[in-house]
Length: 59
Image (cartoon, rainbow, N blue to C red; front, side, top):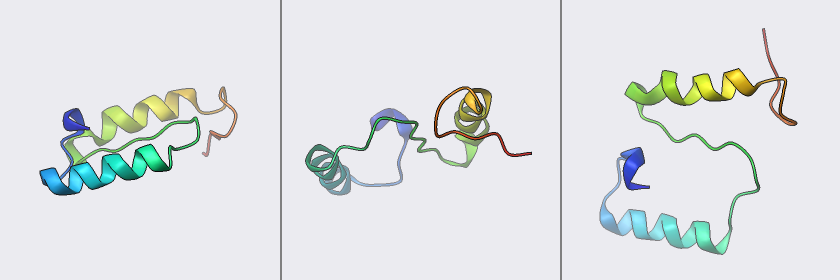
């Protein structure tokens, strides 16, 4: 999670990590981004839209 530059402190990061271990997300695409990373993160999802089940292309 450190590479995502989440606006959280060490205590919150540990709580989030523990929650993810207890309740792992279903297989899929998860994007956690700050405003500066928005285009990069969401462009990856947009590129796969229509080719991966559960990701729909909206026009």
